[in-house]
Structures are given as structure tokens and as C-alpha cells.
Image 1 (cartoon, rainbow, N blue to C red):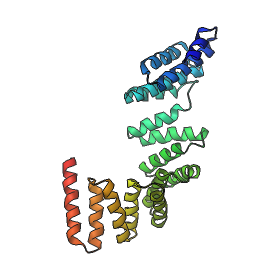
Image 2 (image 1 turned 30 degrees about the horizontal axis):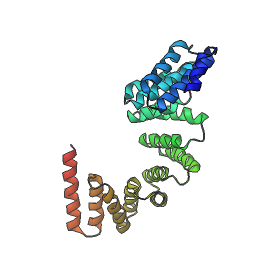
Image 3 (image 1 turned 45 degrees about the horizontal axis):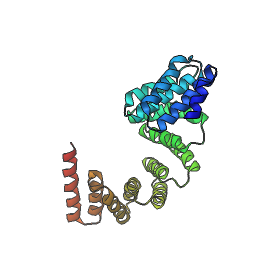
Image 4 (image 1 turned 180 degrees about the vertical axis):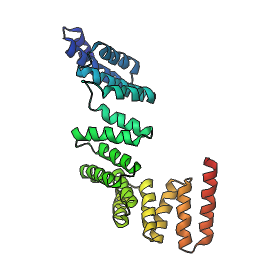
Length: 260
């Protein structure tokens, strides 16, 4: 911080001074000194021309500070402004996409993530979020391609494997889904989402005993999830265990009612 302050106080030209100010703002942000960090970023955004790269980066930083302080609406606005104009800051597309996802705006998220991955081709989380957003829009072929790109970058990532397995299951490719979801569970113990999706895939394959096993493991991690109880009831009914099936069905109904 002291080195950066010395640079600012020396005879730096406007662009160099803006860069030093932004670097100092980042340091203060990492230290949790958001008010000071925000003041520096606001100074740069106010003093820089719209075609100055520092202008877009300053708006991006203001978005990250707002997000860290829990103000998602202001963060979204800053990220949006950071992607506009001749000094658009590329990384803001990713943060803006995540903001769109949190707002349930999958189509807007897809557009931002496609723009981001057109330039940044080696960032697995971007392809993961793109795949999940495409899944939400029902564009399963495109979702699978994006998730495969993510998996190629991080082959043992249990979260990516779970999303790809779920997409394969949605697309009706049950056997491939089972294989992928089994790998997801293998790479991350206690992976409740993968256990749930594996249970669904095994049930779709009418492998009721294995589906029951996966869902019972999931239930240990999510004991109050009505969906887990409901699918357990289906498996138990298919296995002829009617009393246990009814118990889980009753519990599912109870939990569903308490959440409304």
C-alpha cells in the first residue's frame, strides 16, 4: 500500500495514476476496507474518459465492492456499465452473467457467458455456468457441449461431472448419465446433489435397489428434503416395501406443506 501511495504522489501522468489508484483500491478491497477502496475507484471512474480502460475497470471494481457488501442491485448496475462503451472491461461480462443467473435471467446470462468464453477459453467455471444456464433454457445439446468443455479443463471436478450427468439424464441418455454421476460421487464424498441425481438416473433405469441406496445416502445429507423422501417412496414401492414407502411419502407431504 505504501509503495502505491508513493507512486500516486509522484509525478505520474493521468493514466499511470489511475492504474496506481485502482491497484491501491484492490489492495484495500482485499483488506476489507471497502469504503476507502470504493472512494478510490469512484475517483478513477469520475476522472477518467469513457475510452480510458481504467474507466471500465473502475466500474467493475465498484461492482465487486458493492457485491461484497451485499448490495446486489448496485453491483449489477456497475457490472452492466463496465461492459458498455469503448472501454468495456472484459471480465465484467462474467460477473454480470453470474448476477443474471442469481436473478433467474438465464438468457441474458448465456449471452454474457458466450461473449466471455469467446475470449477467455480456459476458465472452467465459465463453461460450467454456461452449461447450467443453457440447461435452464432447455437447450440440452448446447448445454452438454459447454459442460464437456468445462470437464476437459477440470476432469476430476465433481460439480462439473454432476451438472453434465444431470444434463445427460435430461436428454434421455440414462446409461451415460449413470456413469458420469458415479464418477462425481467418487471424486467428492458427501456430494448430495450427485447422489440425488444418481438416484434419479438409476430409477430411470429401473435399477431400484441401487437407486434406493443412492437416495438413502442423499437423505443422510438432506433429511428434510421432500423430493428425496418422495423418490425414496417410489423406489420402496417398486421393491414391494409398502409400509416404508408410505412413511416416506407422508414425510414428503409434511415437509412440502411446511415449506408453503
